[in-house]
Amino acid sequence: MSKKVVFITGASSGIGKAVGSYLTNNGYTVYGTSRNPDRITNSPFELVALDVRNKESISTAISEVLNKEGRIDVLINNAGVGITGPLEEIPAEEIQNNFETNLFGPIEVMKVVLPAMRQQKSGLIINVTSIAGYMGLPFRSVYSASKGALELITEALRMEVKPFNIHITNVAPGDFATNIAAGRYHAPLKKGSAYEKTYGFSLQTMDSHVDDGSDPNEMAKAIIKVINTNEPKVHYKVGAPLQKFSIVLKRILPDNLYEKMLMNHYKL
Image (cartoon, rainbow, N blue to C red; front, side, top):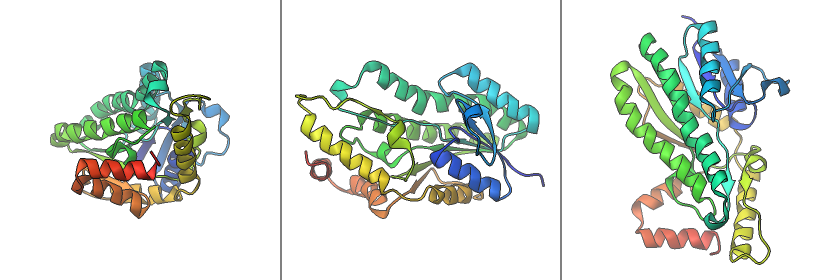
């Protein structure tokens, strides 16, 4: 049997690169994407140019892989961008950019890949979401919303495509030691802002969580298990036990109590 062909968006660094490297080392044919692949010199797998905010770019990249390999067995929608700030102080264009990258882009990638998967009568789509998408976190409202929306899109779409032997699942990571903190949009910490003290503390807390985050190879190992599962579940969570347990607490605690717990954590 020929090697499975895996297409990973946002694979030039961080989780995407770790997953692509791990799959390559385990015998998969991997194509990753980057907005500027020519700038990447150390990728262990082939990179193609793709900007998830551009429909033409998406179609061109996927066509390139289909022309070379004749199929795409696994799509890993990993491209994403972080954003922090008091909602009141985040520019509208930054909110729109976040949703274009974290939600609308992955939707468009799926829309282009699905016809090929239907034709080959098989396929797996893994949407990389976030544990933050399970709850509204202070000063991460936009990020939580965009990732939470992708979770719900996945829940609905997986039912629509099951008759075609196509499986779709979410894999939600917690905090991992990647460069996401450096690449995300930070609303400026404004001197004299009503949020200066609380946002400043939360920003330090979020950055420390990423710095102390887990090894991205944990995500790679989790994803290869999903790929080798005949009937993937709707949701997978990967991260520190406390981060995963926070989802359980949200489900079982009264809303006001859960909110109080979060506010204590962020010293609000």
